[in-house]
Every structure is written in C-alpha cells, then in structure tokens.
Length: 428
Image (cartoon, rainbow, N blue to C red; front, side, top):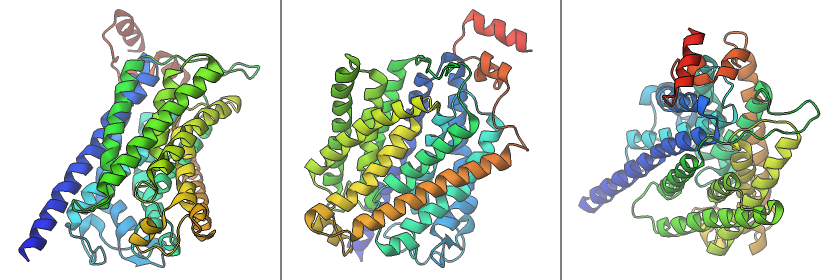
C-alpha cells in the first residue's frame, strides 16, 4: 500500500510538472507569433494568448472536459464531469481527476493557440473570444473524445495518437486553414495579378526564442503523456522527440539552401516545429531512425505546403496550417507505417506498422481518423465563424488593420515610439 502511495505521488508530481511545461509553451506561441507579425500587431498576439489561457481553462472546466472525458454516450460524446462533478469512475488512473484535468487543460489551450497565428493581424478581438469558447468547449473536446476517451469510437477501432498529432495538431491546423480562408488575406499581401508580397517578420530573434520555448515544452507534451513517472518509455519518447525536431530543422536548412541559395530563417524555425508536430503521434511507438525520417519528411512537406498556400493566395502569417495541419497529418499516417510491433503490443494494440508486416489495418484506421478529425475541425470552424460574424464582425475594419490592432483594438502600442503615439492620438 505504501509503495502504491509513493508511486501515485510521483505520478502526480510528474504530471503536474509536465503540464506546467506545456503551459509554458504559451510563452513560446506568444514570442513566435509576435516575432513573425509586424510591430503594430504584437500586443494583439499577446492578448489572444491570454484569451487562450483564461477562457480556455474556464470553458474546459465548466463543460469541455465533460464532453471529452465524461461517461461515454454511443462513442461520440461525454455526458458527465461538468465542473469535475458526477460520474468519472471510468477514468482509472494513478493520479487524481483534478491532476488529469490540469494536464488536459494545458492541451486544450495549445489547440486554440494554433488557430491564433493563422488569423493574426486581422481578426476582431471580440470574435476571437467567441471562437475560443467554441474551440475549447465543443470542437476539440468532441474530437478528443472519439480518440482518447474510454468508449470513443476511433479509439475502439484502434487509432493510435499518443500525444496528439491528429487530435491536437491536425485538428488545430485544419481549423486554422478554415479560419484563414474565411477571414481572407491581409491588406496588401497579394497583388492584383496574383503575386505574393513579402511581409517581413518584425523580430526573428524573438520568434527564435519562442520556437526554443516550444521545443522545450514539447518534452512535457510528449513524455508527460505517459501520465506516469515510472513509465519505462519516457526516455525513448524524449529521444524520438529530440531527433525528429532536429531532423525537421536540418532538412529545412538543406532544402532552403538548395532552393533559395540561402538558409531561410522562418522556414528553419518552422521546420523544427514541424518535426515536433510530426513525431507527436508516434513518439512512443517508433524507432529512433523512424523518428528522424518522420521529422525530415515533416520539415520538407512544411516548406512545400507554405509555398502552395502562397500560390493559392491563402494568408497564414505564421505557417499554422503548414506546420500543424500538414505535419500532424504526416505524423498520424506515419504511425500506420512505422509503429513497432513491441511498442504497439505494449499498449494493448493488436496491429502495428505496415512496414513491419502489420498489414493495412492500422494505416487504414489512422487514415480514417485523420480525415474525420481534419474535416471536423475545418467544417466546425467555418460554421462557428459564420455564426459569429453576424453577432460580432470577425474581421477588423480597414482603418484598424492599417493602423495596427495594437492601437486600433487595444489602444496601446507594443513599443514606445513617437509615431505610435501620434497614430494613437489620431484614433482618439
């Protein structure tokens, strides 16, 4: 009994610490996105991150967690656990339900932060609050229930998504794509003839620091998903996570040197993040070499996806879809190809990677889950933005966009420059 209590205590400490690491990633999102956008919109990025944390946590507490992890209703949605009350006996873990909620709360905040970057510099702050409530209370929890909750229909089919390449990143990425298309490109981003105008990042060192913080937090994201301090796979998960991120960054350095004659800093930053996204589903189930392949492929795919969106005149200022939607898809499918037999069997799965002789079963389930989750995120995001728009205009006015959201919406510039105060005086 005493050993059981010690193990439970260690697991609680582990989960709380890794959840805190994931929450620190919000600082990474803030710095990354603020560095990628123009100076006049840096405060708006920070304010949206505060919305993610504040509203996301409250909404997930009141009803999001219940819809995601509550007692199952036909494999589609949870029906208990509102405000952490009611029947949660089916969540059989060594940690308390409150500890589990705290860890999952960090996840839901990360999902909405993915969408934030895709609509940077032109979304109405009030509309963003309403969409945050929809994402953290309905869109993400229901999709998560299908895969991770006891009785979820995709989970029962055998879908493997250890830390969320599909549930978090593909969902967030395709939601970001829908939001970017719905809201339209920034003023002046695309010329009348179809060419794309470069909007230079305001602070690449800041964006780099944001990426490093995200990289650090990802070890909590992936290794923490064991929910146990004594799980023997923690070290392996950390290694695959590190190798995939390194491979994504290295692949982008080499590819951009080949294509652009110079290593492109924003692409390299996003390449490392793409590798992290790609390995998230299979970090516990693939070999070290497979992690390198997944990271490299994710990084390369991110570059081409970014160029594709530019050609299609879809404005995604921070590359949210290319990093999260595309790499999340690659990582989800990679499990169906590269999951090791011993790793898959270790969590009670009867099928494993196609390239290890596991047949098409797992790959088929992964593909089905990916398509369903991607369509769900895209469609529900479009629907909620459509519903929000008559209530609160989703896009800011032309004047607010030209002046910048910092002054136009929040009434304060990010940097105390004389010109900023002149513009602020004009607005008042």
